[in-house]
Amino acid sequence: MSLIVTTTTGAVRGHAGVFLDVPYAAPPLGAGRFAPPAPHEPWAGVRDATRPGPTAPQPRRDGFGALDMSPYFGTGWVRGDDYLTLSVWAPPSARDRPVLVFVHGGGFVTGSTRSPLYDGTAFARDGVVLVTVNYRLGVPGFLDLPGAPRNRGLLDVVAALRWVRENIAAFGGDPGNVTLAGQSAGATITAGVLATPEADGLFRRAVVQSGNGLGAFTPEQAARVTRAAADALGVSPTVAAFGEVPDEQFVAAQLGGLDLRTATDFDPLLGLSAFSLVLDRQPAEALATDVDLLIGTNADEGALYLAPQGNLVTSTEQDLFETATRVSADPAALVTAYRAKRPHATPGELRSAIMGDALFGTGSRRLAEAHGNAYTYEFAWRSSAVDGQLGAAHTMELPFVFDRLDLPALRGPRGLLGTGEPPAELATRMHTAWVDFARTGDPGWTRSETCRFSERASSTASPGSPAPRRS
Image (cartoon, rainbow, N blue to C red; front, top):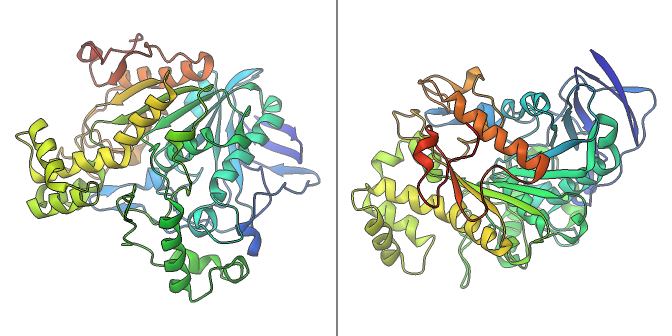
């Protein structure tokens, strides 16, 4: 069923409550790629919103060792200037429904609203208006360039929230009941928005899925990335010079392997990405505490970065020590501490645990502690993928949150969910918790305890890890 909705910049035509590729800001062009997001020019007539549009410039990253990550990373770069857009899934005849605005992950360099995992059908079915957001990535989004505002990708998300406040009522959403949610890089951005005064009043709640409240680069670390980018591109580090460089060169620039450790700070991303937020204070040190917060991680986060490449099995004691060196000034003591907790773990398993905590666990705990009144969770269902090595790895909770277990690309020998039958009941419980949190601010357990999402509800009833109330 076709439906036309009028926004502040023009009318859009969607289908069956779904509106794709709706602009919230002007196309970032030339030197404007390094400017704050600007209002989109109004358009005449009715804009088609029934098909997905362009994405932010990015490399293609669907291959991930033995794992097919295309449902997560999406199609890669779909070219087109007008990519600061969002997509909306609305319940039929919706009015004053809770709104969930989701920010995708992808290491600050990949991802888009076109990723199959982020289909909002289940949220709309259950009475929530889902909004997914494209934002600037890589050099245009996060390079700390003199003369340009920092964290332009984050500023895009704030602009999208302003669009939601001004327009979502026309789609059936309640602008006074907005939840901002994100996963991985999107979760770290969400944590950054919590510490951004310009976003005050734009949302009531936040969900941080496997993010890092300590994940921002310091200005000193960011300056190293800027120098490396300027050298790789053969230009001076100015807005004027970078404004002349085509997006193709930004995407192709090789910035991996940078050592961002300084005398006072470790690299919060362990060298996995050259881009992050750039802040003088970490989000965990500056977040707003008047926003309801749901935050958690997966039990085997680090396995995604080792198992698909075969490194969970082949990692040596030297590999373990080198990983610990990226995290601690006393790597030997760190390894000893992890081994004491996991006396039978292999070097690869210890390496995975250290990476998972460094990338997501420690920063998430600090963010929850700083908030002081957050709901917390752990996702612990173990996938059979990669010969059972993947477990509850990074990104594994997403098909359950979005109730997308039926997505074919998630199944099979190379699929994220493996060859077995994932538990539909767990997807129902987890998706319902997110729906309830968006609706009321209560996901279904107490703030004093951590909800552990595993296959059997009864396995989560121990103190500190209660089962969700719903079954």
